[in-house]
Length: 227
Image (cartoon, rainbow, N blue to C red; front, top):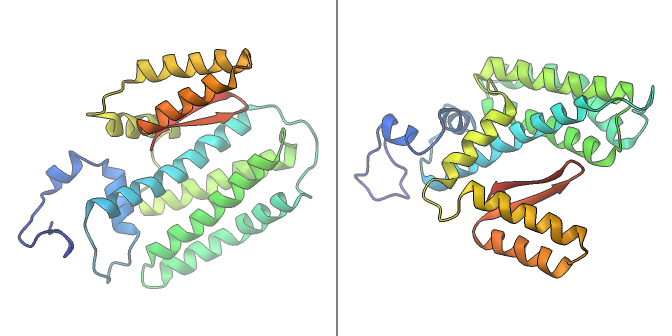
């Protein structure tokens, strides 16, 4: 596999070397992110961006799974703007995905349609405090549509939590901070927040951020990812 023009002329990477640095699904996602007739700019930056995009989709699937594990609290709820938006995108998705694939195998456009579903699903989850029955059904259908598209593209075959953990582990290889230390600092920060010591809480957050660890506070507690 030849390097892009942005890399020193003469550089050459084997698939084995690439897969030692990037998850195989990230490489596939990267290749599908451009039309097969277009030149592929193969460089670390573009592979990293592809990994970030793939993580966004897997993170959305994980969020959907977590939301669906909670009990529905009302029989109806799609009247919200976020619910209506997602319902419309879910209804249109099969035709739009098929149209993209029929357009000379336009996988980049097909992935763009998936990202539209992801954005709408994330918005609904963020704006909803407990799902209604029809919102839960809508999110379940969203997950199904993404998985169906993934079967066509050869993507999203991993369990979301397992994929995100695998990527996190790969990113942490060679870092000076380990998972155990991160978890200890998160626990210390949680204690500081409970004691209303927000200065210490912010110090721990900034300390971790300086080491490329981003904290994500949510209803279920604090999670983290590598920047």
